[in-house]
Length: 417
Ligand code: HAM
Image 1 (cartoon, rainbow, N blue to C red):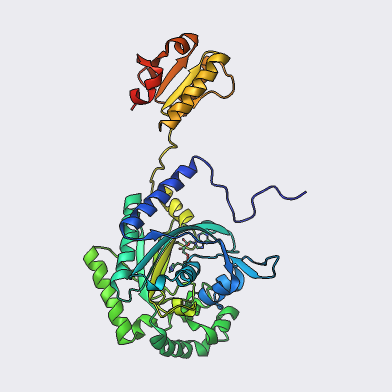
Image 2: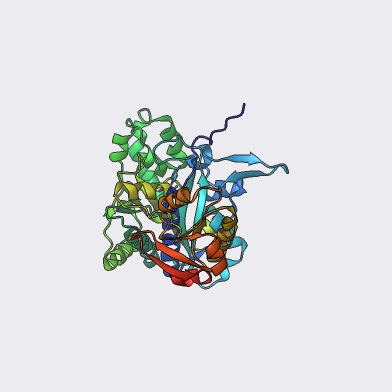
């Protein structure tokens, strides 16, 4: 017997929780549009090679967490583990490098990672993200963080910590990697196997290791932020200045390196203690080499993605109340089966006119119908019988105060506005 349960790491999102999802989706789209970002919608799967090149061969995401399969034509495809690589692919493929800059895009997506499932960590999850192409200076970095801070503010989030760092460019990264190796080399026998693997190929990723035995050596290691080239240092200072002018509070965290390979210069995260061991609601940064690595012209880029499940956990933890599902404005009850036909016709016309309306679909008694109207939270009810059908008039009952007034049935929509 095959399992009839949802696969591990996936979850059903049911009403009334869906109303919280609709609220955050609407708010994010609205804030993004206000900041000049246009929506982009992309395929759920891409050629595996895109993620290998885009996200990076040495990352956990590509090495261990991708849902990769061969299709019937023998192509290796992968469910997207994140959105940036696909956006970059679409940006290049659709000729967007020739558009006026910056090109600003946002997305609402599902993403897939074969991870250890725990609080706030799923195998299918949702991201809101944004990417901006073609602006190299630090102003756009701050604009993007500004977008997030306005979104969080509008959602009612009060305590969300912004951490920023710079991980330099390929030039200062290369000399910093040497420094890092020098600092870790004497401890190779003491640090974990994975850190040993990363030592030559991508030592920066060692800084992200959570193994207790590695932490003391990581904490004692030099930080990239203290070894930036003058251009990268000026970029970071420029961004801090922009954030200060926007009134956005931040903490510099030399430990942020991020789990994807494409980052250069600015990296940032919004963290909270309410969303599981990871604590990160949102992460992003600059990726000035990625468009070129994906076959496009050299183009600076920056973006972020926000975990929607984690955002909703954080909203709940901070006591932000979800809006209830929209109740029907009017319940059209009927005294018997024949009147039920007329009630359903009226209900349909009201819905056409833009009024959320409900009727009875089960042939229930009038008493049961009025109970249902109350349970659903309808603001008004009308009862249709043979008199009402003949005269075209009925008593419109205000469900809150019990008052009634006589109205024409074909003017119901206007009467309750
Ligand atoms: P990321 O840090 O891998 O970055 O993911 C961004 C956010 O997605 C995380 O902060 C977290 O809230 C959420 N997230 C990640 N994995 C899971 C999971 N397994 N379950 C639930 N939530 C999760 C990126 O994906 C980059 N593409 C961000 C970016 C865009 N950088 C530049 N542009």
